View 1 (cartoon, rainbow, N blue to C red):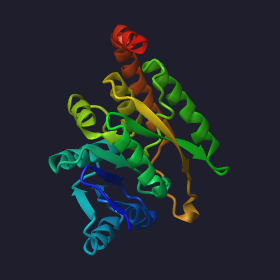
View 2: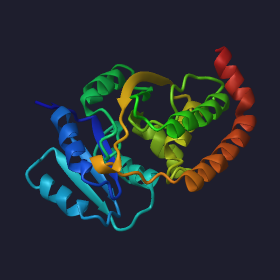
View 3: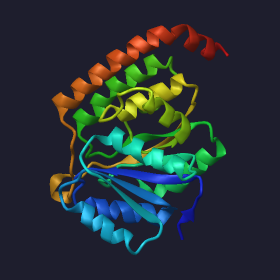
View 4: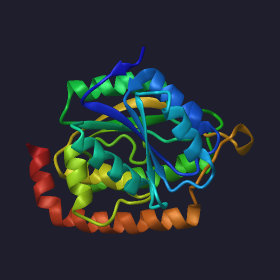
Length: 251
C-alpha cells in the first residue's frame, strides 16, 4: 500500500508526455499519496487519459492548465495549490518515465527527517544515456556550485527532488524567471541563497528512445541559450550576495 501524507505530496508537471505518462503516474501512486499531475496545456490526448485514470483513484488529482507556460509555471501552480491545501513539501518528478518512482518513499523520508532542507536527486546514468546530455550538464553544475560557493549541489538539472514549498513559492513569486526549462537549476541556486541546505541522494535516470515511447522537449540551441542567460543573471546575483555567502560559509 502506498504511504499517505498530509504534508508531503508528489507533483508531476506534464506537457505532451507521450505514452509513458500513465505508467509514470501509476508507479508514483503505487508508492505515495497524494499525487498531483499538473497538465501544462497538453494537446496530445494525454489529458483525457489522465482524467479518466483519476476518476477511479482518490489519491490522484489532475490540474489542467489552459495553455502551455513551461515546467516552472506548472510547478508554481502546483505548489501554490498545495500550500493552500496545507502541504509543506513537494516531490517533483518528470512525466516521461525517466525518474525512479520506487525511490519516492526514500526521498520523502529524508525530507521528513530534515524538513528545512531540499532533497536533490543525483543522477546515476546507464550506459545508453546520450553523451551530449550527460557531459553538457557538467557545465551547468559547475556554474551552480560556483554561484552558491559550493554549498553542495550534487546536480542542478535533475528534476527528481523534494522542495520545502514555502521558500520556493516565495522565491518564484518574487521574480518573473524560473518558468520554463530554467526552473530546476535556478530553483536550487536561489534556495541555497535563501539558506535552504541541499541533501543529495543517488538516483538512476533512464533516457528512453523514441521507439520505446520516449519524448523529449529539450532543444539544444533554445534551452542552452536560456541556461546561458539564466547563469548570467545568477552570476550577477552571486557577486551582489558574495559577502553574505562568504559569511554564511564560515559560519
